[in-house]
Length: 426
Ligand SMILES: Cc1ncc(COP(=O)(O)O)c(C=O)c1O
Image (cartoon, rainbow, N blue to C red):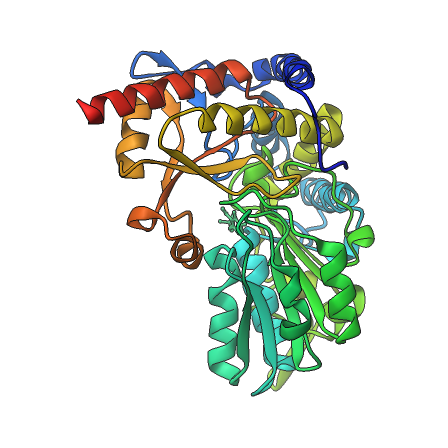
């Protein structure tokens, strides 16, 4: 994937035209995009928070409960066997999507649960007082708090990468931060605030030299670009279905085989055991060891349909589409007098944070909502990054695109921002 998508305004126009064509091919798949908000057509630009769902996903959910509903791994009756096959089949499809073996993919509720699982089940066994955990100031709270909890429990120390002015990770700090004391480096693959895509190859190389593990918070990357966990060569990798056209409450955690096998279970209960006696238990094999209780069967099965849908749209095409639209959006935002965009790292993704003069981002978002435009305002679960950026009110507005967004929608947002400014200046 090249860092520079376009060199000239003409090339950008052409790339945006192609991306609009791509969006128009798929927009009709998403019934919610026909909604009107306050009498205006919905312009949905809050995709980093959660994505919209195509008809195939809605139908697949309906189909599961209409035709297939039964508990998995337990019954010998036909329905249970069919549900189990569909559940395990979905695991294979989702695992293939990130190029992982199916047994290395644990179904979790979301990225947050994946991180907590590893911080607890791997962390308690492997992290001791004085050991170091390396994060960055751009992390989502989900990739900070679980490690802080682990550090508090074990006496480990957390170190943080800073960022450069363009929002990229300051790799010059790597030699100082990653040492033989480091047990794990846990980083966002893509930032939900700055859109920065972190240099994972470099990070993995440095971590390996120090015999440290690498955890990738892939909540923002998996929906938007082709990923391959074996090529990335990371040790753990977590992502959320709801950000990639899937339902809420289902996500994936990939772990390297020998690590998952050596870890204790995260939760105890049914399905995660091999045998239970009054004086103890033995664990099931991976990945069941980490899936205690009745899982989110319906949404796991639908997750399989989600990745099939995304593969049909084409992950490479999604990435190219969003790169063009993001370049277009950043360019148009920066034409607005007094508007600051945060994050200009080369190859950045489509989560774009900004502030307009001293207007509170919540006010901006409210005015945009009246025009049918859904963006996000707040700290985006990244308070340390807000402090580092010195954002007014500890918050920003954020517009984030997906493959069904068009340049026309960006234009509607830009017009609404002008309107907001005129309103507040009046
Ligand atoms: C970078 C990043 N990590 C983690 C998360 C947490 O995802 P979830 O709430 O689905 O667990 C998000 C959600 O916005 C995110 O953007």
